[in-house]
Amino acid sequence: MTIRTTSIGLATLVAMSVYGAAFAQSASDTDLTAQVRAQAEPEIEITEVPETLSDLVAGLDGKGVAIPLTGIPEDAEIETRTLSELDMSGGGGNTVSALDNALSRAQTRLDMLQTQIDGSDAVRSAIEARGFTSDDVIGIYQTAKRSLTVLLDDRA
Image 1 (cartoon, rainbow, N blue to C red):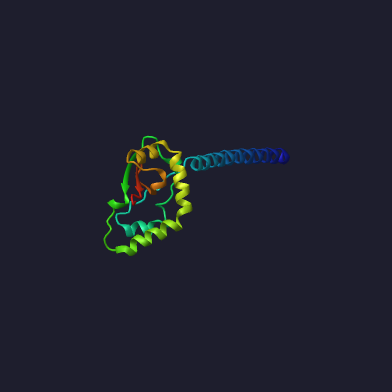
Image 2 (tube, one colour):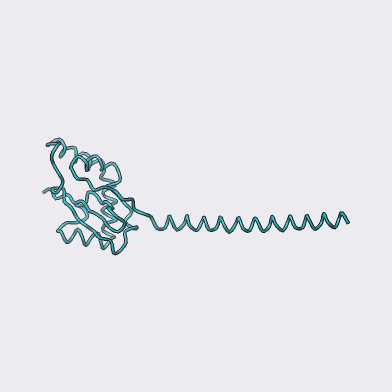
């Protein structure tokens, strides 16, 4: 009798551990699927558009230079702003030279961003409508979930 009770108890324990392992496996599969989807659908961070030339210079080493354009919805609202529309006060000529130095340091990232723009019909169309090309883009900022601001260098 003791053998039979022990056998039933052991069988129950084995069955529960197999069920628990299967449940754990399905939970980790769900987690893995969510991770793969998150990698396949990158989210763009909302960033502030610089209001001054000094803000732009400070931001060129940060998020303003390159964002993953694969995350831009086709129906995104795209605004363009030019460098001359920024507040130029507070830095004088030193800020303009600082901008040129920052653009030079960020050139590799800018090249990557400009290549991505060439592959995005929505962004490319918005900048071409203002008479610019991807080579004139010095930053893209997501200002809301479906809203972008493209900053263009309009210096001669």
